[in-house]
Length: 626
Image (cartoon, rainbow, N blue to C red; front, side, top):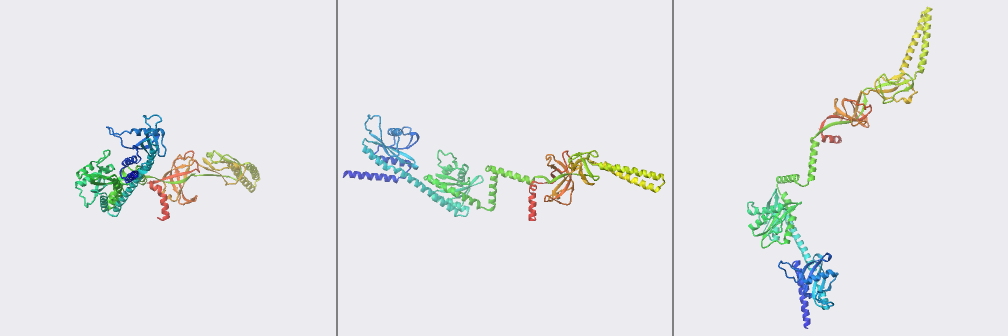
């Protein structure tokens, strides 16, 4: 009966320990100490430790029970049993299940049973990490070791359960913070005017976080202006409190960080204004949160609370969340809830700040380059030129035709050959038949002259006159044939270049009197004939200057002057053009009639914008009748 009573008491004590651990709400370190103490008591262990195994046999000691005494420097050394246990685990290793290992020391005899054992218990630690529990048992009884091992296995989920409850609690707290921030945002969004929205924000934060005062200010120029204060309708800017609050906000905005007072010693921020506010109007706990929008600080919120109730980490996170989600809509109302002049001035200032600020460098360079480009094409002026194709032609042409009906005997020139006036024989006609005809006529003339002489001696005057007339007629025919023989050698009447007359393949062929055999043009008398489109011809005038470049030698520009503009249009390649004649300033040796190219006539100066868009504008005018 007594044994049963002791067992019941043990179970009752174990249940109380487990129940207390399940309800534990302290920190993770305190929970670890409680778990080790409970495990030692339930598993009848003399001492315990929890380690986090590392690479290459190393380990990090997370907790020890009971804690070893501290040395004069305040540091604690590992207990001797734990050092021996870590060495043995490093040598033998551990598996993935709970196990009991004998722990020997140097005082035991060889073959003697170990009087101490180490129980290794794998555990799931904080955040699901792998931990290992080590428990020291002082016993030689294997049954006692096995019993302690079973008890310790039952305690393994204790810390995992605590970690799960802690994570669940943190998630619930996070949801609560989100809900609080959303409720503050809802209070702000319910207002249509900035002042009412700012007051709703301050009062809502004041109520939910139990503060002494909540203030919000926005950046105006380079300084922060206080815009709203909890439970305060009118703000007197001459008050020292208002000036101190604006100083604290400017301190946070300038550094773009949260500022708290009291400030942690390791914090690398300036907190002079926050300290002065806390001491002059307190003692207070002060926290200032910058308001952000689009990556820029737009204002700040200052929270004041009694020094006896400092803000916890969770409260700071909630306030930070509320400020982050409420800052943009407050700033939106602040910018829009103003008269038109203020909005225009603020917009102009933002645009100017964006234009001269250090951000978006490439965009600004592009805008400057675009502005310069627009200024150049709008204000800059360039030469306005009428462009048109041209053909080189001669100012005069000499046609060489066949002097009589006959046959080509020889041809001495081809198109492109240079000829000299009255010196170069172009071709020669066959004269054999003419010479025979000339001999016959000479014989006929001598016979007529003899007959006239006989009739003169006979005194027959009439017959004499008839014979003299016949002799004169034959003489005229004779002179005609002699002239034709002379004309059979066709000479160039002028110097220049043979333009047409490729007759070498016609040697021996017949020609008729008046047939065109050759065309000769002078090399000095060349001009250009431009084909100007009808949409540009009205811009030309006689006397205009220009330059042309031929396809044969595009690098040599030849100046010219407009001489004549034909009044009638012609269709050339399905386009109406007007022929414009131009006199060349010089005639280079390589220039030949028939060469083509492009000519440009200067007609004045115009803006680059008009020069580049004229064709498009004229097309639109024609389509829209504008």
